[in-house]
Amino acid sequence: MTAGRGALVRPGPVLRAAGRTLTEILRRELEEAIVKGTLAPGDRLEENDIAQRYGVSRTPVREAFRLLGADGLVEQKSRQGVVVRKISIATLLEMFQVMAELEGLCARLAARRIAPARLRDLEAIHARLTAAGHESDVERFYAVNQEFHELIYDAARNGFLAEQVRQLRNRVAPFRRRVTYKPHRFDKTLVEHEAVLAAIRAHDADRADVLMRDHVNLLGDDLVDFVAVWE
Image 1 (cartoon, rainbow, N blue to C red):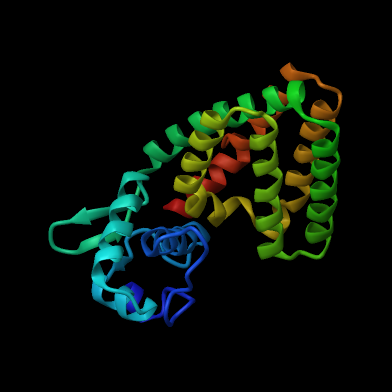
Image 2: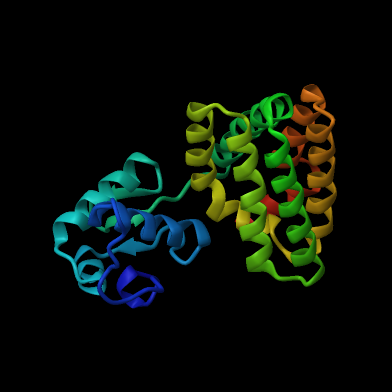
């Protein structure tokens, strides 16, 4: 599948956002399509088609490709051109291990540093996530789940750490989404989030770290399911 065959969902001239270049907007649009799975691993990105679809020249499209390549989301193939990057199962499992450690550190620091107002925000997000889970709303559950993790990154108050974990999370998101955000898994995610939230609320840094690492890493049935879906 190529981007020119309806893989992108926002045709027409690209909207200009204050303070953002066309390249930045295109990179964000394409990144979102990759993370959501609208553009799947192996899909080809046609430079001309994307330029026409968004009503821009080819120059910002090429630059957006370059930035996505630097983030590990796309790669240049000699015969296919630019494609959404495929990753081996072994590499993915290694990436999940690293991400679990980084997210565990975020939770550890958040437990020590979170402000009362941010803790209330985190509790409100968890309440919205619970509602989405009870309604079996996959898309809303996935989006609110990301808000939960994003707030913990920010609450850690370490900008470099937040940048690194966000970049890695984006790289694995298309693959994790295939198995871990299904309606039958909502209850498990909610229980694990509640435990992380309780540890952060109690300012128990060690427990927050361990719980978040176990939540993010692919272990037990999650690992078996992931490999089965991947194959």
